[in-house]
Image (cartoon, rainbow, N blue to C red; front, side, top):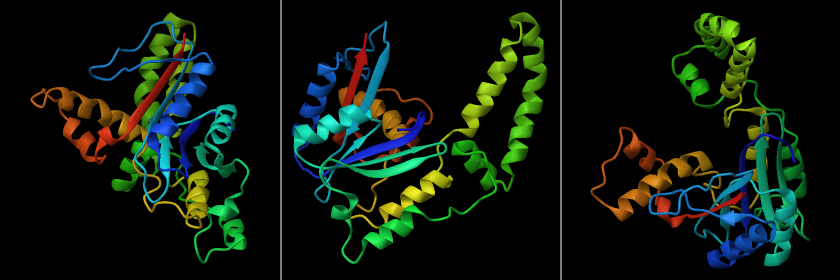
Length: 265
């Protein structure tokens, strides 16, 4: 599996959510992970963390239960074995993507009525539409909204930060320039459904018998909305920050999702 996974989900062809969450918990604990709850009313985030796994398990829909977040391949294989089913794993990185069956069956078993293996083959090999933009994520969307090319956004960022980083360079022996470059890479590497890897995934998923909204919500939106929903569940009169209601509006019923947060200490 590629490094720097930007988007990932696993679809489990079962409707027993508690069975899935229990299997995940046992697998992570067997790997030496400890559960933690960083959300309002929870136990907080432990110190000395060396590795984490952050997942959400959704409610069943059309015979599938979705797990949002990235699961390492060896744990994914054990999950399929533990549950006795073939999982549908989907992941997207900056340059690669994959839709694959994990278990004893193949993707052909998940084809929609009327779709053939040839349809799936063609979908996986489509030539993505080149938008001509390299900037992804929210900044890329903003650039499109105002009709500005991504390269102009990059140049503006570099121009406005150059003076600051040049001054800091003298104090940090060149480390500031590296930080500027890393910041630019972060901005460029934000997830977008317009990216070539994401377009390939979307084409493949049109051939499979999965819920129509298979990609919603995103992990990012759910992770932002969930703590707000938990806070309001504890205290309906809790004071919200500006923008919190907008975050809640992006996800329907956040508390229907169960967080599976584990850490290695």
